[in-house]
Image 1 (tube, rainbow, N blue to C red):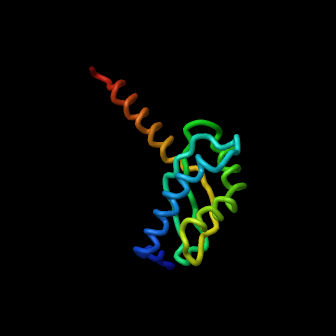
Image 2 (image 1 turned 180 degrees about the vertical axis):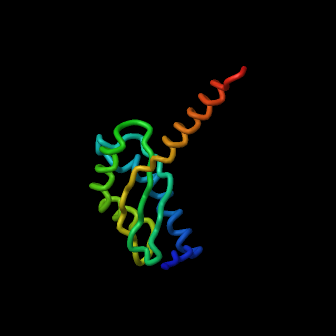
Image 3 (image 1 turned 30 degrees about the horizontal axis):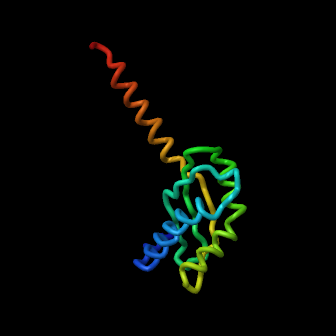
Length: 121
């Protein structure tokens, strides 16, 4: 059985900084019409800093189109992060749509509906 390595404090700080920088860079620098209003929800960084999986949610626009546009712009975004971070290895970015927000809203609606439809009242 393989054990997942616990992230180091430096790895956590680097991931948080990349997440913060992407949240600033995407609305300012990307001019792709496919990118809607994006919120970066999480970032998973490999222990060797080679890859970062960036999870995002979209308030406007299509999640599929936004994911495609972000992945198409990943090299450009990586270059901008490299200029800001000044670390030896800047990870290759992979973007994935985070559906947890939508699932949470659906669960909340189901709970509200179940509470409103109580039998015997």
